[in-house]
Length: 254
Image (cartoon, rainbow, N blue to C red):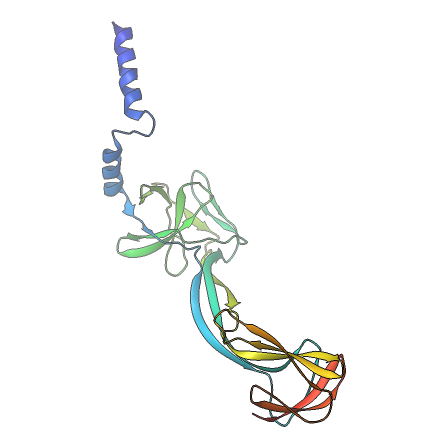
């Protein structure tokens, strides 16, 4: 009779916890809500767009002699977009640990710590940082100091453990760091004229028109290799000296 009771209890227990089913999930949720702190999720590893600049580039000045090599720009007047991105993270001011009576939580000065969320603890906001213990979070105050307890993440709640921790060294703190980079778009308006050398006693240029919807239209332009005023896109310039390797010129009209 006892054997049958034990077998029956085992079957019931197996049904309750079989697969992904858990008949006590609602009870667990209630426990976490009562004993834990709701976590406001934060993607501290995300890249943020900081600012956008519209930049105009002009490479020539009237009445000044300039020399450029073959393949370089003779006349440039174009506009493009530059986007600046930032990524924030935290690093400790030195190697240290959160010491306790059981085991320390090691904190490494060369490691980046990204915020995973925040909680409201007694009216004060603490940022959550990953710890060396899987599933546990360190609590960081606004000034970078570390709270004397850590917590375990359970169903969008943080359960603080009873063990008390002490930062070591005493002046151990987290510091906010920022990594920045920029991305430049293709030219969105304007033009670029590049020197293309001398062929068949003519001076050649490549004209790039950036005002086209597809991002650029290219043309080859040529002029007799002799003194005189050359006009491209309403910009007049005089060739002072030219060979197949470089050109010296002066912009006269703008």
